[in-house]
Image (cartoon, rainbow, N blue to C red; front, side, top):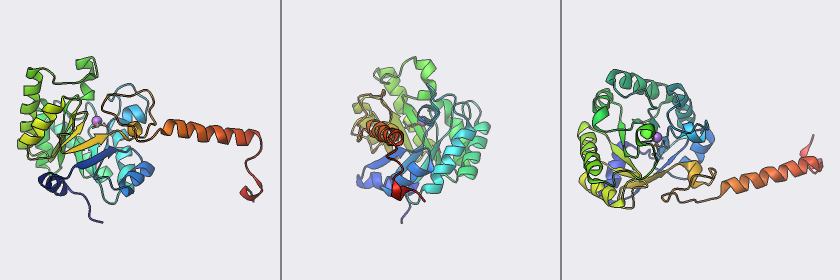
Length: 265
Ligand code: KIV
Ligand code: NA
């Protein structure tokens, strides 16, 4: 199989082929998503929510991200694997950002790291890139800043915030990021940024004018039940199917239908 590289992604943008990206946090799901043909797998810090049950992405640690990253990388033959730098491991201190990124690359064997922010983290971005580690940016709604926003509502609807986002996107491209994620912003702004940048822009709730799309796998499979923002398309209702299957198993155990004659030694 021809592996997806950062170079392959930029070629996809050039020829107008949209980039598909999903999260995965473990070996089994990573394998399924890779075998289905996804271009990019994000070991997102959304693991804090969907794996660990935290309300925000802030509590997840670098060690935990590395555990998830390792598990996914073992399963993947084709997709580009990106691991999120968790909250508190890269902001404000570019040396710490580099050390965190080196740990991720050495211990997980992932292809790249992702971090939230523009101008505020640009020194960290530059220092990581100078070590030869590819960086994916993340602008718009940045869940690690939820306590600053106070709400998960759509970002950059006002001109000032939109202008800052465009400026940050330019800075990230100039610094050398290979792609950026734009989360929950107006479609017109997403399209404008994608047109202005040469690097691929991957959206989640950023409309159809960007260069690719990303969703959290537990959301698009319908494993998470309460979360239903407008941008989320559910491709399955796995919560219902899993609960149905578990219910049938319970019934069969209680009624002694399971195991039958052929299911024992
Ligand atoms: O952590 C995550 O899942 C993400 C995506 C939503 C882009 O950052
Ligand atoms: Na994330």
